[in-house]
Length: 273
Picture 1 (cartoon, rainbow, N blue to C red):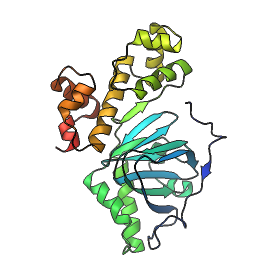
Picture 2 (cartoon, rainbow, N blue to C red):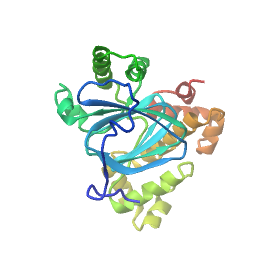
Picture 3 (cartoon, one colour):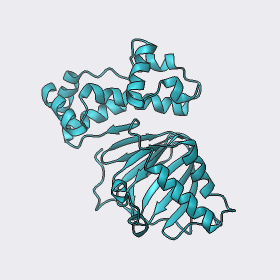
Picture 4 (cartoon, rainbow, N blue to C red):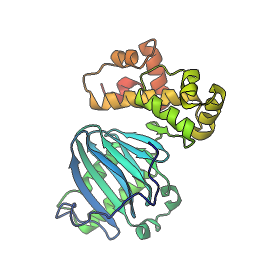
């Protein structure tokens, strides 16, 4: 299904008073919201007047924007610019910690230009502790402001696109992409897929390259690796061998090589096993 247009997308007010836990202190222009969500919940497409840093201290979520899908396990956080339509799917029970930034505050940032687009960051131990410390009820105003500065400093140094699956906008190409995403473990043949969406394999191949900056083969690999990350993040009992077989790889080494090519780490290193 194609995303809603901006005119149809609801603008959600920052839930400063209703959702924020009572004694969190935050500097003017930055709002802290802590919420827990159950597995399987979907937050439908919406947008905010503020920019957001969305972090799941526990659990894995998927964030979908008009540009693509970001898989966000607990060692990642997603930056959503003000006014960007997005939907969230909770793939596990989530402990969400969100920082909202008023544009007037954000525009004073030296690196503001880099904060006008969406991206995912790898959450280092330092960034993790800084975010969690912001929700300590014992914080003073000075400590909170220092922690916000630390978060912003780390944010600019940890960008990571490994869990991003770009979505094409051209209707035929987008239909083909969604067919693959509905079954990322399948071995999708571009000739068959092209017939399903009413075009030629040559045209579909060209569209994938121009719309996603990835070849069809590379895009399908990215989709499979995203599916693997989802399983590794939500199923502690799944083995690398099981995943390799389910995703259609000939061997564990072949799967590990593909996983490393996308994420920079092996599946075992990613899962911390």
